[in-house]
Image (cartoon, rainbow, N blue to C red; front, side, top):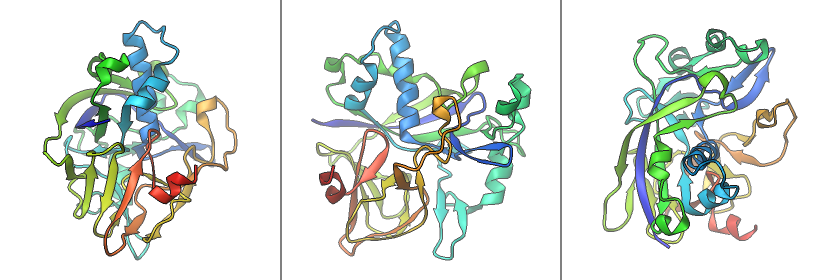
Length: 293
C-alpha cells in the first residue's frame, strides 16, 4: 500500500463547535478539529455525493484516508497549534500567540445567538469564521493522506466531497460549514515532508503506515494514546477524546474512557528520534502501543 499526501486549507464559512466540556452554563469547544471529526464530516459528504445510500462508506473512508488534526489559521497556511512550554505556559503557533489573545481573536460564546438556536445551543463556544478583532477570514489547515488505489476502493469522488464539509456536533442552521480553498499534493521522492514547518518534526508516508517523526523537542500535533510507550519524555495533559461530555450522542453523558495526550503536549524525543504511527481516527501510537491492541 502506498499513500498520496496533501496539505489542505479550508475557509470557515460558519461557526464551528467541537464538544469539549462545560463550565457553568457554557459548553466549551475545542480550539482545533480532531482528525476523527474531519473524517466523519468527510464520510457524510462523500455519502451525499454517492446518493446517500452507501451504508459502508465510513468503513471505506477509514480504510482509505487519514486526517491529521486541523488547526485554526489566520492566512490559510500557518497553523495556530497549541504549545505547552516547560514552564507550563500555553501559547499558539510558532509566533507564540498567548492563550488569551487566541481566544479573543478566534473564539466566541455569542455566535449561537445569531442563528436563532435554542438556549442550550446558544450558550456554546464556537470557532468563528471571522477574526473577532481584525474582521479578517479565518481558516483551518491540516494534512490528508489518501491510499494510492482509492479509485479501486469506490471513493473516486473524494475530491468533490472534500469541497464543502459540515464539521462538529452542531450542524443545524448551516453551522460548522467549511469550504476547501487550497489542496496541495506533497512532492518528494522519499515521501517525507516537514510537519507544519515545525523544526525537527516530519511526516513520512513512504511505508504501509503514515509516521510522524520527532527529532527535536516539539509540541504534539495530534492526539497520542496514553499507553504509547517508548524511550521519550512527555509533559502535558491527558483527556478523553470526547471531552467531559459527549455531545455527539445528543445528551450530556460523562465520558471517562479513551484518554489521550492532547495536542500541544511537549514531547522530548529519544536521542535517536521518536516515531509515532497515525491511526485512522487521528490518534497516534508508538509501535509498542500498537502491538498491544
